[in-house]
Image 1 (tube, rainbow over the protein chains, first blue to last red):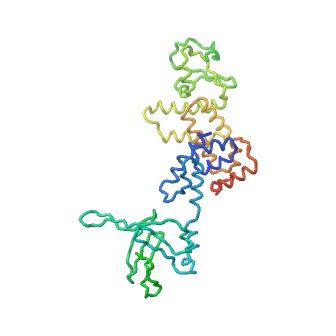
Image 2 (tube, chains in turn brown, orange):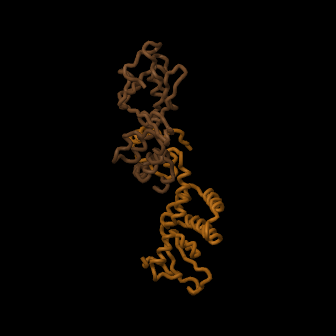
Length: 180
Length: 180
């Protein structure tokens, strides 16, 4: 039976768990799920920490990961973002010189997690720069550009940051902290 | 072990070197005369003859776990593969093998398939077993739990409550399952 299950995709093996107690015993074996976890995690940006706890069965790890992956994160963030919903101003992110990042108190999206950024510059030699970007946590690299009104923009395919105008300009409040 | 061997008092002398045949007796008492290279694909037969010096060509090897019907199916497969091997000893003609295997398995009902898997497992024919378990997997892939139970004739020994819990736990596996 194990030989048959080896030939099945993850979903079908998961279904086999419900066939009977004996099947559950075989279908939950790490032998089957180790490779399935590796396959699932390959190339993924976020793997839930809980799923990587040692001693957790590979089936549990797989199941946790799949359910976590189905969590509609962008949707979730979007609904909390007042600017996106048109009910408030853009959220603020403060980039501190020490490489940490903070948000305004009461920011729902922020949720109190730790955040850090770094500026990555790689030189090819002779003063030439090959790459120049900002990395926030483990997100895809963010590239910095300058807009027509001399404001700064930093973005990747998921996120976009704009610099806050000077204190005396419209929408400007003046930097509370030093802003990139 | 050798005490269980029945000697057949049939044909002529053992020196008829034309084509060596090996006699295999199924659970329902039918004796199959099988060409040696074909019979040797059955690992259980090969090791039986390799490990027992006192067996002769007249020895009928009993296979109490294999039915006549399963034996027919197994020999058909092994003979075809022996034929491929004889024609092209270097590398099997892959396309032809695949075409044969597809046609071969199409004619097998689920019942026959299951019986042959058990027989192939007992006879220890790894190639056939790999092939058949792959076919069985394809037949139950994406199928509902009920279908898999019916396919293998497995009794559901979970309590309704346990089953409901498992369904909730592995909810992700239940999207878009074929019911038939």
